[in-house]
Amino acid sequence: AQTVTQSQPEMSVQEAETVTLSCTYDTSESDYYLFWYKQPPSRQMILVIRQEAYKQQNATENRFSVNFQKAAKSFSLKISDSQLGDAAMYFCAYSPAGSEKLVFGKGTKLTVNP
Amino acid sequence: GAGVSQSPSNKVTEKGKDVELRCDPISGHTALYWYRQSLGQGLEFLIYFQGNSAPDKSGLPSDRFSAERTGGSVSTLTIQRTQQEDSAVYLCASSLGLTDTQYFGPGTRLTVL
Image (cartoon, rainbow over all chains, first blue to last red; front, side, top):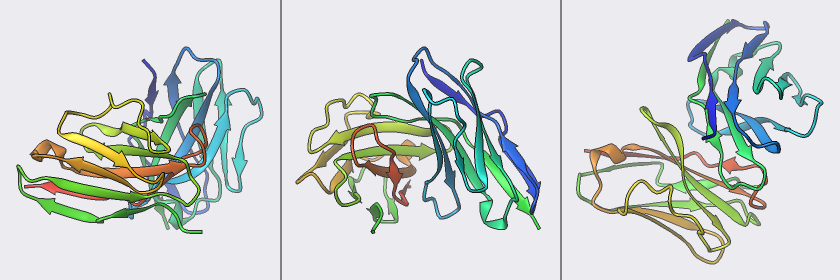
């Protein structure tokens, strides 16, 4: 079965500092997609970043970047220059290529301290 | 443009009643998905639609759950004879095509008393 594990239920970071959220996954597929979604208290799941497994280059979106290690099945999210608005639940998700569904981890609650 | 919208935002119902949850996807998105987010189970996939068709209903928790989509747009998730364990946030997402990035709505928080 495909599973996604986020080993850090909670993390905190000082404003302007850098934080890394961990995610590992288990799959026998060779082609798939990985995502990080952010869920603030408003409940709206917001896509932060997307990575195609066939791409070796790590995806980046402004202050957000990933460290994708395919052999280790690891997909961590790095948030640079953390801002108060980054405080939220962060979910790592996996989707096999050609599949219709996302498999989510349990989430990491990120607190940003001023 | 407008994102995915869901209604109602919150719903409180009594055990045994039926409820309908509505999802209005992003215009032009052909695929639509329902997920359930609960404290004990995290986020779980329920069902997806490609157009008006739902090829796989095996993710629905029980036969009290059903979903439909008409006109390739709005979808309704219906829960009959609600139980307390149905209490959760129900999230809807849509995507341009079946394997494209999914964009989520704000969810409906269902509380069954």
